[in-house]
Length: 278
Ligand SMILES: CC(C)(COP(=O)(O)OP(=O)(O)OC[C@H]1O[C@@H](n2cnc3c(N)ncnc32)[C@H](O)[C@@H]1OP(=O)(O)O)[C@@H](O)C(=O)NCCC(=O)NCCS
Image (tube, rainbow, N blue to C red; front, side, top):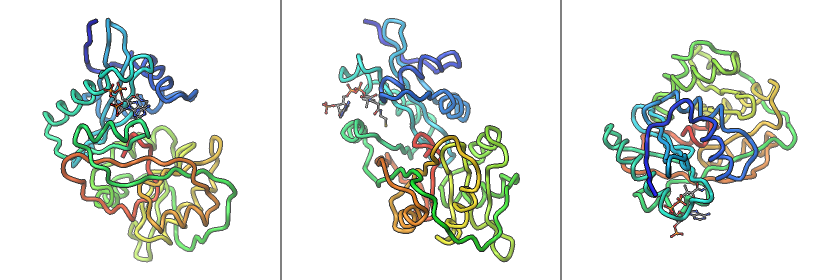
């Protein structure tokens, strides 16, 4: 048996999608997520092959101050034989070689005992919510579609603890006009939300009131199916807002950090782009 770990190429997207779907037991395609995440940091995506056949995938996105690992998957027939461990160790060695001292990820149940073997520490719980029945929210501030992504990225940087400019630009390209910004009385940016076609996030706000107004404005847009929110951190303001807005929780994910924890303000985070995107 010949095992090789090599860079992920564009032509790998369909086979990586098959691995991800089989590993996670879902029908939905990972194509758009794979394409977007990979293009954000092309040099940090890898494929594990056994006898020339791709059976594993993992990648990371560079946010400047830290790297976020996502989409780690091994084909079911190959799981539990050490392949995942070898791929994870390889990815970590590569990321360390690129100078990352801080690496984060969100884990499924299958990863709860897996990631601590590589030095990851459990650092919080994220909950995924879906809209059950829209409820009235307060929106007493100016909310506008924003094309000045630099302004949003500057507001976001101290909250997220990294630079999401490239991600925001990718999301705006994919679904134009769905990044909304809240302006305070002085005209300063006090929050933003990106309403992806099926996920409301990323989103960050200075106060729960701003987050509420942004969510209300986002919900005026149309969605592909039931909109979901991935709350990066289970905090009272976020959970209360979800419940008040008529969302219900349906899935949790665990946040893990390796090395230095990113300098974030997690209580100001009200939605993430995807578990694979920090
Ligand atoms: C998690 C995963 C990447 C591990 O790859 P792997 O090749 O099976 O891992 P290894 O053989 O190197 O290590 C096995 C360890 O993984 C963990 N693990 C793997 N599958 C598991 C499962 N279904 N339930 C719980 N733990 C699991 C365990 O810690 C296991 O060690 P143990 O049985 O001695 O406790 C792989 O199982 C997978 O792709 N799972 C489905 C997709 C997924 O959840 N990916 C993680 C996204 S964050």
